[in-house]
Image (cartoon, rainbow, N blue to C red; front, side, top):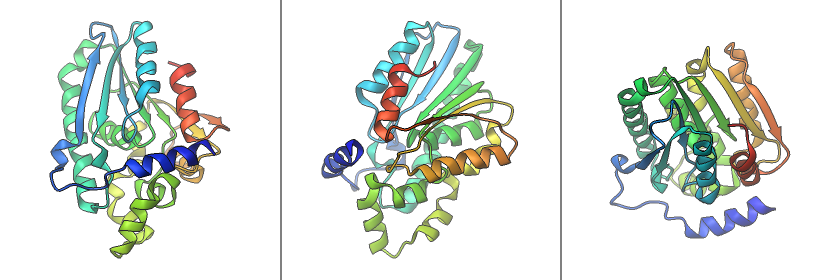
Length: 244
């Protein structure tokens, strides 16, 4: 119920597409805090940012004397322009991997945390930058296309794409380069934790479980935690009380 209410409110505020947006705008910036600590956590924020919950999560990490690199992304990284979505995530992959290459020698470990849509960037960066130590994926989906098509938060995007002739199957094919399941091999030999919501309608649970299964089939043995809360509450609980 809470997810449904918040989805209706957020959808009314969405600007699906503008003429001024370019893939180079995908990275809305990052903040590196407590930079002199010995361990770094990289946070890949959800669509439209994480608000107070993600800010609190970052503070919890700093209270444990961890460095925090918090990435936020432009709202138009997901939009009814199929090619531009791929270009936006490719840009994020390139720039974030480059950022990490420049600072990796400062830290004895680098932990990735992806939240919701942020897990797409996490998975793509993991494929390019293999020097991360571990990853936590909070309510991730196996595929951007299927999660968007069936999720209650993105039905207005689905309707727009459908009007232009796209189906779930054709979109899933074109968006394979931005599907986290494409990059499961990047997590081989890493400690991986996946937080699954069993009541999720925004990134439907079936696609979260699909990613877990793909990892297991690839020989990766993620620690899986299942929450009976919905999408937003699962994120909130992790940010406020989850394992650091």
